[in-house]
Image (cartoon, rainbow, N blue to C red; front, side):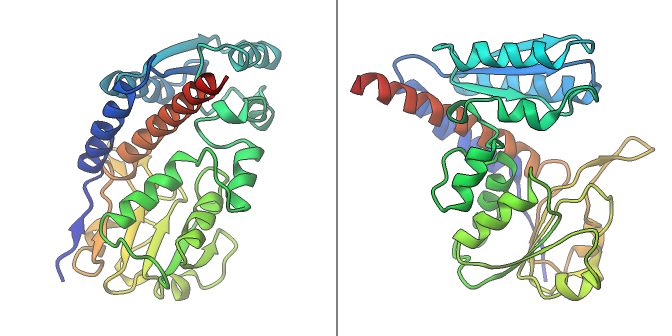
Length: 285
């Protein structure tokens, strides 16, 4: 069996082309505000990528870089200002935050309509109730990548390895909405391989490099590798041993170049959705 490498960069470029047209149809361009606290070198790279990605489709991106010593109150005050600003369609807080700041309290402070990461309890609750508003970017990217090779997911057995608020839990709901039978596994799951070997769709999001090998998957499975870790020699590794899976899986996302580019594209789509809603609400008023 020849394994298809799912080209996340190409699919993300297609999505950006669609978004650029939607941005051009707006009276005013969307405006994303990114808040970055501290000097985490990875965060610096991610923020820069978001600035470039936004510019590529006509989204204005303003970055607010706060020092490492900023208090939680300082951060919440800035979010409060942006919540009330008509010039802010989307608010994104770059994670991780310094240890003295409570991540959950900060995320919950963002107005749900401007929560373009889709991580507030309100937006996660809407997803759970089957009435999604802002959908978390990485889970939605996973769905887009899966459907690029298999449009009809009804009846498929999907196994998720990981249960984070960022990926695993919302992805469970998205796959369920596509009429998959979904099994969620995690670090306490016994006999993990017994479950992953049954999966038609296997999504791995643990941050443990090389956790899944060829013996862990079902022949013909679609494998989505969300994990990305920097190894001691400097190269990037996913949670799946890609070389072991080639010839067994029907399709797999590469690391890098798979889930990452599509996640950024879905962030841009959420910003555009927020701007479209803002414009439509203004017209109704």
